[in-house]
Length: 390
Image (tube, helix red, strand yellow):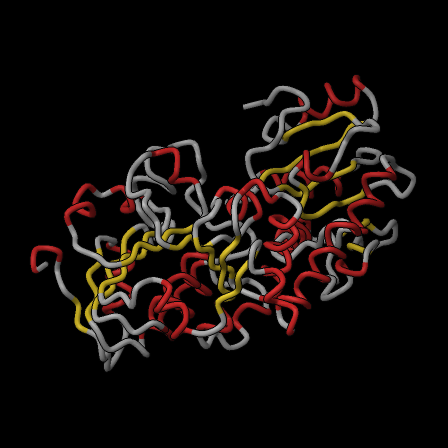
């Protein structure tokens, strides 16, 4: 299936700036296009004729023509691969490097290999000319945290330092930071029953509305338009779009790096409402899980935060780990039912498993995948409760 030229890709993307056609580059682009992971592949063409030819050759890719208005954000770029050392658009590459995106080139020697064109691309370069292995490395690199532009990044880091210092009181009309599990529990009304909803198909189970709970935790913002279980007491945001969409709701971000992104996204856009937030690595013991790759999903971090509050009961739904036959999300059959490049099932499973071992209350779940994971916890201290027992 081919896509119209200059269409914004639906997922975060590997952006490829093609060079002269050869067997190696063709095989590498095909390996990216055929990946089972949830991502888009964007090809940047120098001319209209080249754009038409690329769209015909790679129907699964999104093709954009180079131009002065072509921005990494428009392409949803997370990684850039330049296959021709002289290829434009140089402005796109320069801005990507400034934002901290990994930018790679392809060596012209044999064996063919990736080379780093930005500092964030330098670690662990594979020494292979296998196109599948090179594609896997590019997809892995998509998962690393990207930076902000110089102005937004500087403002965010300045604000973050003050939110951690004595001057934080001056920010209270705009932003308030919750620093401990006790303070977070109090902000949520010291809940005895916490409902944690991921974004999988079981988050739309009609039984949820009848299950009593004291606090509702949700992930990102895709569910807002569905009109179901929208009264979230806390929203765990992993991307800037969700940080903005959360408005005045209490926000949870996983890490200090995400806090920086949150402040950059919200302090420069005060019309989204007064900001209240917690950094979960300061609320729950997450170890070093957030500092490697792949990382736990935002839904897994939400669950860790809920467990740190020690409620008597957890109700879990929508934590389907991209294993539900109904698809990735409720009612969305077009989305690839797979983890994105920043995450994978094993990392999520291990992380959730480690936090479940710390929990001593009751767990009620409507997700078969989560139930299977919970049942695998040996010597568990929690009790599994069926929805019919509510």
